[in-house]
Every structure is written in C-alpha cells, then in structure tokens.
Amino acid sequence: IATQIAVLIAKVARLDCPRQWPELIPILLESVKVQDSLQQHRALLTFYHVTKTLASKRLATDRRLFQD
Image 1 (cartoon, rainbow, N blue to C red):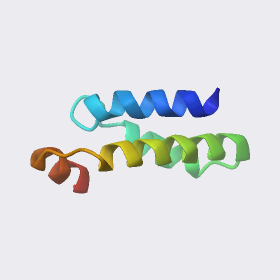
Image 2: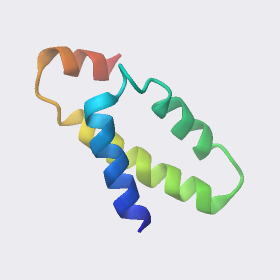
Image 3: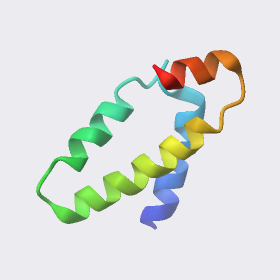
C-alpha cells in the first residue's frame, strides 16, 4: 500500500510540482530527518518515486525547473 501511495503522489507531483505544490520536496526532506524509522522509510520511498517521475519530464522548461 505504501508503494502505491508513493507512486500516486509521484504521478500527482508530475503535474503539480513545483509550481502548484512547492512544499512537496521540503516536506519530504523534513520527513527524512525525523527519528521514526517507518516515517523515514516511507518518506524516502516517496522521495525516490517523485524524483524518478520528475526527472522523466521531457519539456525543456520542465527540465530547467526540476534542476532548480
């Protein structure tokens, strides 16, 4: 279930991040820093899928925005 939620968040992020959802990446990074190992693992899983999905964008403007 956690993997499917991470994939779903990544699909939404492909459309909305970072223009309409700028707080996604900072929230995931903060969740990685917490002491709870389960929350850390799920945040890393979600961060992995989001990064993988955002890196696959093809348009030049989207790629520049992802690099920033």
